[in-house]
Length: 306
Image (cartoon, rainbow, N blue to C red; front, side, top):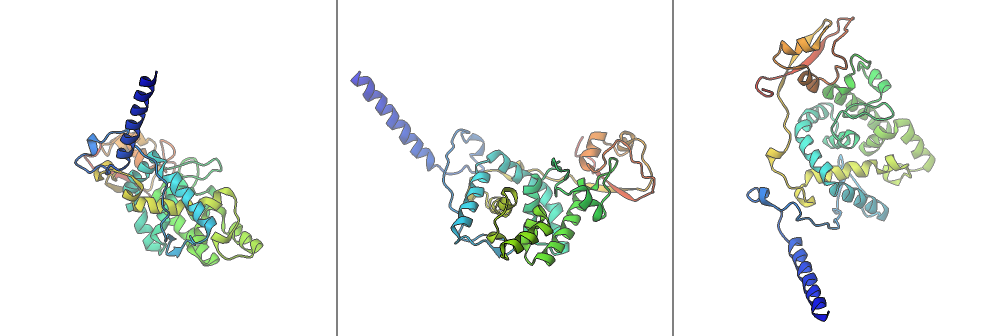
């Protein structure tokens, strides 16, 4: 029995040594990436950076409450690895569409991370009725010039939806005075944020006591900004070829009804599914267009789906 116990103790000691050695192995390089063991996995506490900001506005990390809340979001988003890798992959595909529109309107580049936490860079659908990458409600879309109905829903048009988000954020910044509050208002509404500021007699987002969703909102945005900007620091390993890339398209102008989008797609050498992938705002297999409105339909260049 004593021999068995000593043997088991020795095995346990060797296992601990192996774990200790694994903990200090280097992250995979491009040369050894494909041979890296998938079970070589360790969990570490994270060090919150000394300085973090949103749109140039610093986060008061000397406040212990703010530090703990930031630590939580960094942990949650670092160790939700599958979601994190998808964000890296999708951002390579969609940030090049979002970034120039933000810049054109003078909206800080950091707001692209707002779209990340709103929708995961997908055409998400919320129980409340918000749609698309920017999670725009029907009334907000219509108020900002988008067509929203069963036949056409331009909230699913990434370029047009980003334009609407920019206009909303610029108005919120003008009313509330900071980009951080403007971002919070994207979640809770201008009136809601203004009311809370007045009720609690404070002027900054980080001094507000808010509900769960809006209370975590800015911390989630800054966490995604930090992680997506520093993949190596947070243990995300990938090569450029692992990321998604946009398929080049050209625009076809349509100012009449289209009775059959399957035939329409075939005229451009694609099928209906590919047409909808690039034009999710077309909600039905036909276009009514009784008003003879001008629409621009994206068609992928040849050779990408062959």
